Amino acid sequence: MLTAYVDESGQEGQEEVIIAGYLGNDKAWERIVPMWKDAIKPRNTLHMKKVRWASPRAKGLLERIGPIPDLCGLTRILGGVRVSDYADLFHPMLVERLVAGYAVALYPLVIGVLNWIPKDERLHIVFEQQTTFAERREEILRVISRQTQFKMPDGTSQLAAWSSKPKETLLEPADALAYTALQKMRDPSSERYKVCSPMMGDGTVVGGFMPKDFVRDMFQFINLMIQHGVKPDIMDRF
Image (tube, rainbow, N blue to C red; front, side, top):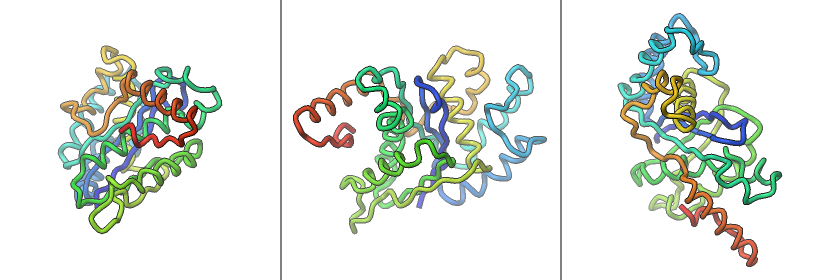
């Protein structure tokens, strides 16, 4: 069983939305806790939105925590989308729920990971606890878990489980990575991203951003199917 801890950034707005975090086995997650707690001292917890970015100490903090997930053997995972790339294709009420940026960003994240892990591995995803998109997230993950391409030989889904927890130590690296990826998506030349960039390591991630052309093509295809009375399966576009 592999476990992913993920957090989101930008989900409150109508532009860029990122869901990101790390994937690894139990041993990797056990290793990161003491290393992370030591690196963020004298803080007891770390939330990127509360970092004083004007302080020169912010750069040192990110330089300390950035390499830790790699040292522990964890893998970066990410799903991202820009809502304005497709929002004009839908009624605003649909954008707020059915095709909200958080919901759409789940697909490249979860499907990217399931395509990447070995076929004899199963996946448990732990999300930060939140209520706004919890119901939609549940619907999407149930659909993905039933897909044939993600079944093991005995018919068991590789997507073994998903759950949510309040912000805790194991979710803090995900928070840092999601925040960093959001800054990169908004403006990779910004000073904020330059400070955060140690979290990206060599830039290798499983999953990725959904390009504008792809996401528009996907939703135009779905709208066409609806017009012809066909119940669409968004999975067909991945």
